[in-house]
Image (cartoon, rainbow, N blue to C red; front, top):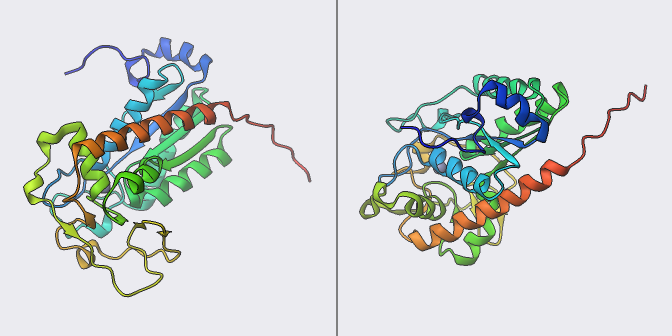
Length: 268
Ligand SMILES: [Zn+2]
């Protein structure tokens, strides 16, 4: 069921209205998620639900400066296909698909596009989309992962030392937004870290991410789908993480909107 017309929703306007909205040059925001396993305790929609909620929260803070596109609920998941329910979009297919969205938005005269991502394995693809959009159109297009907006808060208020998947941050924010859909009695801590200095498993407290990037088959490295500690997730932490993410994202959007697009110079 659809509610009231929201000033920050791209798809709530008519085409005649969009022609006017483009004149104030809001930042067009595309949330990208996934439909994928997130442990025994969380539904398949975690990445999509969290990223679209964070984007909506940021848009509510600065409604005239944002135009929120409908979220993309599918991502690149080939390494998760041992887990029932996961839907994967091939990487090249996803790249072309999202590039078609940014090109369309640019075609209608919008000059600032931000892809806000909620699924780790989309990140490199979305970065390529953003870079190609900049090169192939006269638009500024950037990308970020929503959790990077909340990571410092996680290390300050969180109890786990690893951020990766279906973990403290994702479970806490989901609990804050819709606790009824989280089965906390099935939440686990699953952290099997091999004795390897450089091998990536996520973001570690005080260390960041490893320089070696290799994504293994998920079923080799996780029993339940969780990597991290979901047992310490609470509604209260989720609220703080969500507030931090929305505040910082709104600030970033506002700054990105004012970044001037300088003319190109052919220096041959
Ligand atoms: Zn996730």
